[in-house]
Amino acid sequence: MKTDGLSASISFIDSWLALLWERGEIPGFVVAIADKGKIVFKKAYGYANLEKKEKLTTSHIFRIASHSKIFTATAIMQLAERGHLRIDDHVVDYLPWLKQHQDKRFLKVTIRQLLSHTAGVIRDGLVNDYWALLDPFPNEKQLRTAILKSSLVFDTNIQMKYSNFGYSLLGLVIEAGSGKTYNQYVIEHIVQPLGLKDTGPDYSGDYSRDLDDKLVTGHSRADLNKTRLSITGKVETNSMSSATGFYSTVADLCKYFAAQKVGTKLLLNDESKKEMQRAQCRVTNSKQSEEYGLGFIIEYLSSRCLFGHRGGFPGQRTSSLSDSKSDLFVVVLTNCIDASPGAINKSIFSVIDHFLKNGSASQSKKKLHRFQGRFMELWSILEFVVLGDKIVAIDPTSWQPFDDAEELEYVDEKTLKVVKTNAFASEGELIHFTFSKSGEIKTVLVCGTTMWPQDQYMKMLAKKKKIG
Figure 1 (spheres, helix red, strand yellow):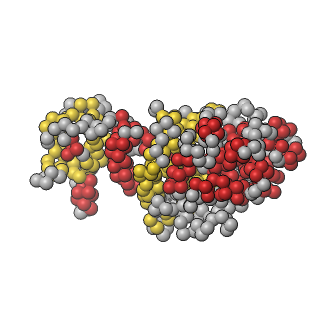
Figure 2 (cartoon, one colour; figure 1 turned 90 degrees about the horizontal axis):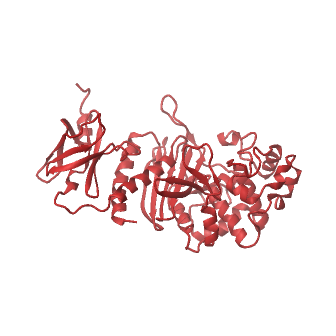
């Protein structure tokens, strides 16, 4: 990875994410970026609790929900390596009560099929109001009953059918194969060996270690008055912890994904890791180009092949993506039910790629960096950004700020020219800068429109009672 390009992108990302939080409606989010196993960026934006105006920090703990599946799949592969099971074994060999199922297709379901969501198992049961916190999450007895009442939705190995019940069954398989409870096993064989101090399989008195002070508050969708209700994260997922119970922080998730890199000799051998990260089935009817491995979602972004997972817990949504080739990892944790952390995550990768593609900053006499900055006027916010030996103008309020970037050309030490832009804009026109004696930009005349540095414009606006 080109370190200079990554450093330049991180400098931009911090300011950009701060602006997007200020002008967006997400209560709070935390972002971390790791390069070759080392955290190079970690920042929190917004509030951990809107009602109390509690500031969000990078140490706050989130319920990471379906990220639990990456831990469960790791546990299954560990047991397979130790000879306690084989991933192509039938699940009924470990859970003989499934023989009672009226749908005899359950007898053919394998561990691999549950791992890859190709077993055809119902997603969350015939009644799943526990997701709205109207009921408790099912205990083992209730889970067995719910599974025995529901037939397979599809035949095995026909297509992907995402299933939290399927991963709940895997939790029981882990218990049968290890002789320990699921929670005990993952703590002893994954959490503790990696030193994940703020990670655990469920919120409970036995394992949560006084989480309350560090656990973020979730938030509902905004009502018509733009008010959000608080949603507690203090929820036990019981027998579904292997599908959705985990909690963690951005730092701990960086450690986990670093351990999943082939060659580290952590958690699993390389063949198991490669099998987990290899596509097992295609995600059908998806707007994205996605596949599923064993516990990992596999996504494609430009030339990158990324593996990771998303999670949705009441009031909290999360996303982790890792590029094993470049060893770059990004995690985004949010605390409202209508956030889109996966889109934020991909946007961050996209921004990084724009800086990497354009190489290091030019050492020419043009000194393009003197033009960099964020400027405002009534109609727009505009930011001038140096990408290698080029300078562009972008809309920093966009989650894809470089997609419609205007390409600019150096004219002289006070002037740039728009050389490539949308035909509705001002191609071929000039941008004039005025500088103070110390070299700070005072104003910018952008193709005839005066703009001011963001802070200056906001102060000017605060003094006005109306415009015009």
